Image 1: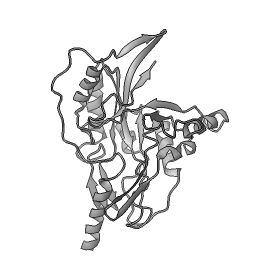
Image 2 (image 1 turned 30 degrees about the vertical axis):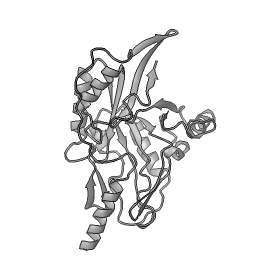
Image 3 (image 1 turned 90 degrees about the horizontal axis):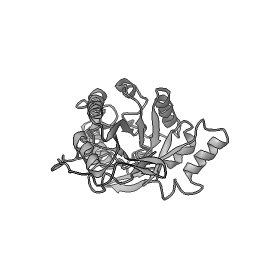
Image 4 (image 1 turned 180 degrees about the horizontal axis):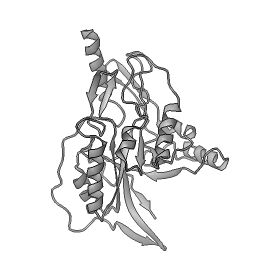
Length: 300
């Protein structure tokens, strides 16, 4: 029993060290001081259009970012960003079974919790006229062990989504997103658990986007083969998905003519999808480099 528990902890540690974008806490890096003037105008006019510079999908010290929410907001002011979307990782722990867990420091943890995270970001949003701050969460809805160790561990680990427009912490607390992997080999569940999760958030007024759709992983951690395909394969399967982050991590495949984003739009034109898919940019900021403005989006 002791040997099994030790192996389980080792597996969870290795998995936590390599689960897509979910990683361990970073050291907090405070800003030195605020700039007197921004690098760029946050809002400007172009041919009759009012353009607002925005960065979406950003992480703070509530998950694996190196900036506090306040410093991230100040960085946005300094760089001339009008809209800042904060979406820290949901995953507070990576668990193999019920008792073998490794803390990865996300929102769904005893030290944080959805209520504390929501209240903090909401206060910051109320106090900030520039930038406008949007509240969101990044979630890895389903992860499983597909084969025994030495082959594939952690399938589904790259299937990350950002969600927005949910202002009730209890909706997130009750969402049908997996918090642990089973202590057994499981088959690929297909799109079903993701569709269930997307439908749940849409039913509660949320917007759901696939993050970094082209990012895949096929690597080894000591004796473990961590293999997770690019999440764009889910686009045609999720009829109520709001959109996809095409810039910058979807430009190689997802956003190409005839790619998965086009396939989703064809489904809408054919009547198989209730609404067209949005395409937007996301920074996926954790810490410099790359800068906060990486993957900037313009709102009109």
